[in-house]
Image (cartoon, rainbow, N blue to C red; front, side):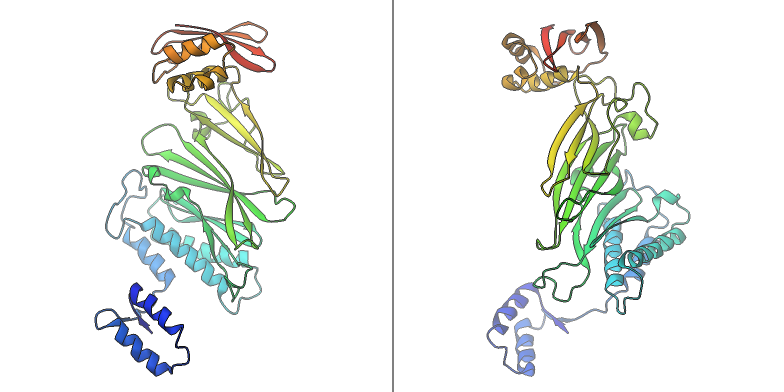
Length: 405
């Protein structure tokens, strides 16, 4: 086999389209002439991917088991995790396409191949804590298999399946049909990754669906971020993964630390993460002006309806609906967005004064909430000035009815 650089290969493909009847020896001679003395080379021997996997692990066996926060930025160690995850993908697809296939179903063969990689890591990285070695999870949502992999501080998923369209996959081979996008986000450098995979309700068409939840733990900091991504696999639609839901946010400190809900847990008043059945619920928090300390006090749960072929947003429930108008009015007041602020106020005068008087970067410091009656509260904040709000529940929603500084 002879290989040429990309430009020569393109020229050769165009040329051979018009001379398919030319004898092979003539074609080979023409190819050598096109390539030139310095552009062609013999095919290198293919490296056994399992041996490559083993050698990559050995290369960093003496390094720290936690690559957070110190990442290699250059040299052979710069993309160790990506190399290992890519090899895992290659090894799984090779096993699924091996002939004869044997009596075991595809998911069992994929799992056995991954268990072998896990054993290799357990042996080579025996000095490391167990959680830092190579691990995997398998989600069988026939006709595709979703595989989550993790090593040290990184994690990702890839999906293998068989595209139905013979134009794209004439030999009906297993192949990679999709990967996550979160692990490639350059803004996530300096974070530890954790991934969880969940099967989802398929809907009338029966297409495979799943949810990935990435949790990002900053190497230096207290607040974890979360990203929910739901995907659907339609084998008839060019065999590609389609993203059907995306929701990002933060976690409160208690949630991120793994403690059970306590009375002051921001999630205690809203439902847990739910992925079973036609309605799924995704929990998250975000930075707001009512945060006290380093926590995220404003949280919500978004519910989506998966009962049909088209995914629909169902509802949003807040843990602190009474304080939501204050948090949102301050957020939009900092941006001088009068129309948005007005949506959380009972009068034009209050909205205009908030847009005029609210400075940049308001923090609650200490938040004092006093109940004044049924559906009525008085709220005071300390930083950067002493702000006072009166809020009332009118027609089922809370509004700011008075504001002073």
